Length: 109
Length: 113
Image (cartoon, one colour):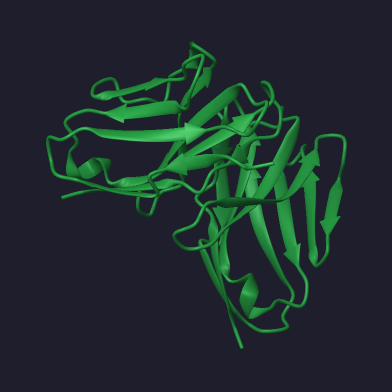
């Protein structure tokens, strides 16, 4: 049974800091991995989707990497801003998506 | 092109009442997924439907919960005789096909008093 774990559960950083969010999964037979952002009381916004054939995917200040063999993905956020404060979720496909519990990020100005 | 729509956005029910949550998928999408997010928990899959068919309901509680996706109209998640533990955010997602990218709606936040 696939399980997705995200560490840390919460993270507080000052503005401008670079940071890394971690996601691990138990079954490496995945064909993609997706990172989402969720603002309080809101829905999910897809940030990056990495196909299993890719090792990295970039969008602006965000960079996601995928290492299937080790069952890990990281989301790197460069030069963090207060507007980056949100919960970040990673998900892998099963019948539907299987989510981690998320990392709640707080960026202070 | 409108995204996935869910209504109502907020729903308050008293214990024992029925809750009906609606999801209109993106145009052209015939696959719908329902997820539940309990307080302090991650999103959990509930049910996967294609037009007029339930494909996988392995995440649905065995009692009181049902879902449908008729040929015409939105997908409906129905919760009968709600209890306080049903209070959660319910999200719907749609896709063009199986294993295609899922697009999420804004969610319905159910509060059971």
